[in-house]
Amino acid sequence: MRGIPFFILIFLIKLSSFAQLSEPEKKHFAGLEDSLKKLQLRVFYSKKIADRFEANKQFLAAWASVLQEEKSIQYPFDSLSDVSRLLSPDKKFRIITWNIFKEDGTHAYFGFIQVNNIKTVKKGLFKKETSTQYEVFPLVDKSATVKTPESYVSDPSKWFGMLYYEVIKSDDDFYTLLGWDGNDKLVQRKFIDVLSFKADGTPVFGKDVFKIPGKFGKRVMFEYASEVAMSLKYNDGRRQIIFSHLAPNSLDPMLVGQYQYYGPDGSFDALSMKKGRWTYEAAIDIRKDKDKNDNVKKPEPEKQKPVYKPK
Image (cartoon, helix red, strand yellow):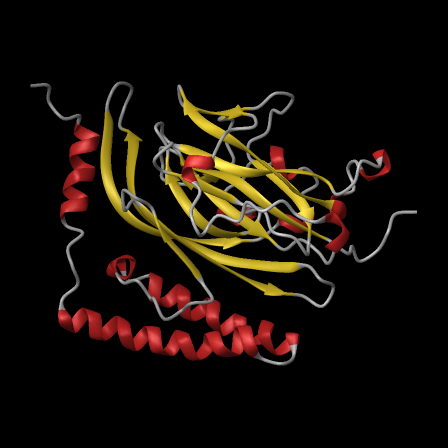
């Protein structure tokens, strides 16, 4: 039997210590959760947007304080329903994100990553030392300054903000994140984002892991009308990311590229993991995979009413 590599052994030891919280610890974090929940109400339900942002300053500070406690990654914070809290399948990290609607129709994003990091540090010319360490990284949204989201690569201090709703452990040394961005009053966006970690443990967003004809991005972006819904989710049975095919709601060539008129056309495409890369497959057959939660009804263009029409 082959031996377990040293760095994997360390991670397995780390996970073995990922035991359930004791009752006193649960009580402690429940108290912290209650304080966060009170702030959450002000952040998301204050009548004035200015009041929401003011409360959010306290919300950020409270989260930062709570997350400094290493065992906080084991507590679910389930009552904070307006905040996305995604634990990776291997329990290496949890990513926490939320958004606040702004008066101009755009969104501001906030969050943190908690990481059980495995760090590899050089000790001399031929020697490396591996260690584990718990770390917390604030996510600082810089999306308003990013002109080309699909090619953008950054660390948490220059994060392209979005609300994550699913995390996938890929076959290689990265994780795939599915996210949503409200963008503006006309167009919303969904993303297939990629998270990896440098040898020193620093998270990196964006990576060249996609094999899509005509595209060379570090993440995948879908743009579509603000009043319609598209499906983007991972099918574990098929090991595919399956998504609605988007198209303009009429054959008018003037609408090509005007995403306030885009929506699902009733067909589906997919990305399959092949040799460490997400590889594009067009027009897949999902009839055997349909369930009551899949919205596969073809949209009715005449019922889609854009906010404005192009000149």
